Length: 155
Length: 324
Image (cartoon, rainbow over all chains, first blue to last red; front, side, top):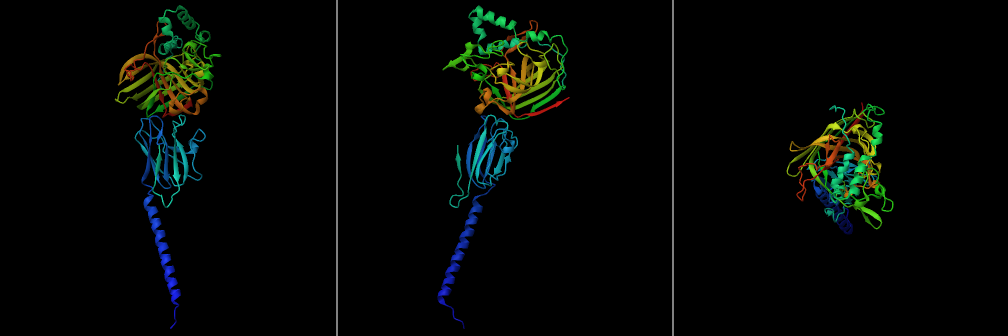
């Protein structure tokens, strides 16, 4: 009968244990990510006002999160992150490769949501009030393992 | 479209002098018994700049627009409006010059010129008009704004008659649910004596500011469409005031951040909005002039006074225009 080297067997046990531990840790991390970035959950709400402001004007979210806009004013507004619809240079700027977004005209009390899937800074505007400089900004941060559920809103 | 009969509104632009009633310039001078100022005003009215031009045009048939009549439709179906409140207009050096080299003195003061006496000065520059006017920055937002315009620009020049047409309706609501409405035009201003009205409806021209067509207190602005006519003021369906001069225009965007009224170099040429103006003057048809009289708007200001004019901005517009 063939004899096995006990040192080799011990080493194999240790390696197997390490492999198992790594695998469990990796999958556990993925599960946490999946649980905590739910694109259907609204990470922040921005209101549109009678004074032609997005309030807050700047929102910081994590990649994959969703922002909701609510027209809380008596005026019709739009949420337009589409450079092709801007008539003033720089009214809408997107990270390279990001999809444009546009709510169309929103009557009072209407809402609009958009999920951001690429990190970077997005500048958007309101079409009828572009001349009045009604601008807003969304800063989408990379997902990090240690702080992937945080959200910061700057007023 | 509502066909408007050819109509002559006498002296309509001379009577815009009455706007001085708002800015409080002419009346104090007269009240103080200053015959020189009063006499100057009378002479200026009699010497209205377009009277000579009108002499050549009063007896001609309406001249056709180059390229033929242009039909215009403008609507706002939803969203609010900006109602402009009396406030002091900052004075644009491009339009008004400086105290050393003043501009916008031509024509009749208060119409398309502004008297030096009501111009504030600081550090050798004009600052703001010293009296409130309908052409400042203050405003409130009211809801449920609706606008419906169907117009035809057919007549090119001022004349005794016009083939221009317009049907105009605008309304909006305050917080209490009261509905304010302006309808126009039973008559069109076929001509003006201070500046032309192009038969009552005009398209594709420059107005206000340095143009001398309309008050210099508004910025110089490209005007896609404008009209002058006589209409009526309603509140909750009841007619409060008629006939009133009604002026509307679709222009490039002349407001900036916080809705402050732009100077000429701050206009946004790539966006549009619609202005409705009902100034505080009433026509005296027999005398072919207007007299100062606040508009019965039915809307109370926070100080309890009734807003004496309507200056309302519509910005959620659908616009269509075609040659007939």
